[in-house]
Image 1 (cartoon, one colour):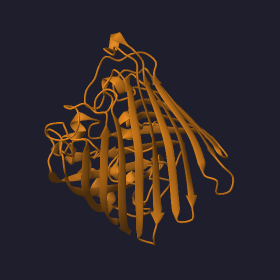
Image 2 (image 1 turned 90 degrees about the vertical axis):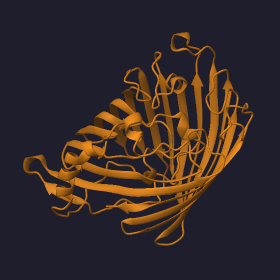
Image 3 (image 1 turned 180 degrees about the vertical axis):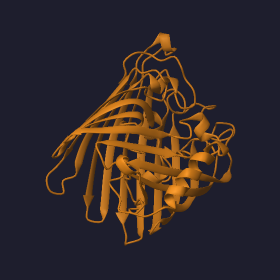
Length: 377
């Protein structure tokens, strides 16, 4: 896999070495506390405008109890070796994330960086063109970050290193087209896509946000659903979730040195015999995400979650199982360098033996310590 990236990375490192310039707005969302490099490399490509190149290189190490079958008690790995390339000075804008990555997530076995791209979204996990047709309106086409959910695809984009329990119920990347409209405090998006990367274009998703006056924060309503049925499934395309309908209601506000981001999530999986789903099932959950800025370099993030499941389908740790989690993530960033430590704990309830955590799948909790460090260049 890495050898196949050599021509791409050689060309991009030539761009990175060329010159520095001021940065247009990044098309990669960063929710914090990590801050992207504001002065990436820039290449003037004449009538086509300027091409900006930035990236992230980081590694992680973790130790845990009750590792699942196929997982390790302790491991170290490269978790990001990404180059972000974009051109957004004109009405036609381009963005691509290139390179290997991994998705550490609570309560799941860690899939190494050498295996994740081949089993999920390939060596270009995000790649799209954006046409800004007139003020406030744009169209995006390609491999797009999903509108659904409240956590982003790469570790560096989120409050915490690991993604949470609710994230596992939502798509991360979808192929399709998306319409966006923004006017003052209102933001609207509508997407036709392939849901959980199924290559079956039968999903619709949308979001509506409203920014309150003053420092009142932003309220966002997000929804998506499979309008047909999809019998296909693989690692990136779980059968039940890809045939679901999902709703999120989120709120985000900055209060002095605090960023507060609670959200709730509901998903419904209808009976669908054509897709092999013989009964109706659902999940209901909520999360609270917090970041406190301690000083210029230090911050601390926290996340608490609850997710419950009902019905005949296994959506979590067996049909009818529930889980809750707590994650604490102190973060240090100085310039382009960063380091994060993380402690997380997952507790299960109503999970049948044989579908829980641990080598014998009979443990109802998992504690994990993790460390991530790298550069955002």
